[in-house]
Amino acid sequence: MHPESNPIRRHHRLDADFRPRGCPNPDCPSRGGRAPFLWKRRGTFLREVDLRVVQRFKCLVCERGFSSQTFRLDYRYHRPRLHLALFLKLGDKCSLRQAARELACHRDSLLLRLARMGPHARWLNAAFLEEHLRRRGGLVGLFQLDELETFETDRRLFPVTVPVLIHAKSRFLVHSEPATLPARGNLRPADRRRLERAERKHGKRRNGSRAAVTACFRALAAAVTGHGAVRVRTDEKASYPAILREVFAGRVVHETVNSREPRGDTSRLFPINHTLAMLRDGLGRLVRRNWGHSKHRRNLGWHLAVWALYRNYVREWTNQEQDRSSATEVGIVERRLTPDEVLEWTDRLPDVA
Image (cartoon, rainbow, N blue to C red; front, side, top):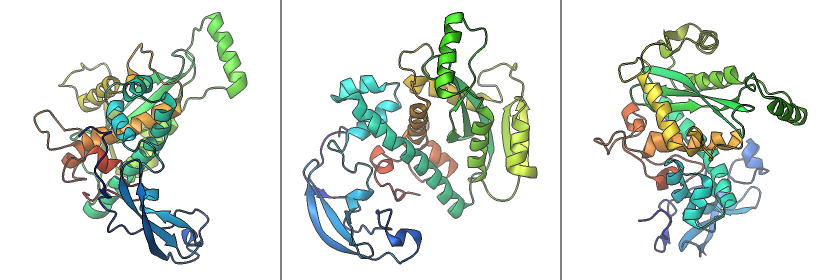
């Protein structure tokens, strides 16, 4: 079935047994623990856009109404399966503008969907890792980190660093975090004048590499078992040892690899180098000398999170092992997931953890 084709009229897959876990009203007293959450069913309605029958509810605390649709990622979408088609294109080197041409919609419509999918993808990956820690003790093994350099709007004036942290054996992408870098040196007079105008408007551009790398290692610290050593392999960048000591104290075993060592499948950093190569091949924003580069670092962060969700849970691990994924290899889930499963509910995990 094409990702955007309409299903037949039916209840949601979980709608018949759906039980709300909380009131969606942010001002409801039950949200702050001031009152227990009480609710009741209140009929159904038919969504004309996809011919689905949706269960209504009423919060007995704040008297506000809501439905099971409120907790779905396609809430209030007039083309509810458009984000599924976009999800697959975002991992296939397709820009938003080209995707808009192929899907017969406006680019801003896809940007709005990316703005919802990006934070959802980041939350879902973190929630899966938290559940894995609770049920199976967390991630174990060797982890690798390296930084990919790209830019927003202008290659010389606004470079961006993207630390990427993976589980080496499964290639599971644990976390990535785009951050600013200062403008390059030896700028031409015209570029210096443009940089001065930008700094007057937005302030001086800082080096955010340390903060971004720290965020990656903190995400790892929240996902690994609470006892035993944490093995991390990186290149010889001077800032990494101090960050690892800060995050992991005496638990970390840090191995460094000289960047002058030959690259290729025999390199000790081959898993992370191969992952970064896949990122540059799969994300149109990261292809070198490319018109589809990111104009805003925020959009790059959303796109990275969506690609990681696809790479970790939906894409086959290898062409020969298509029933497995990176997440199955690391033990987080028992089977590959579908786009419908990872882009369905916003308040709960798919029933496969």
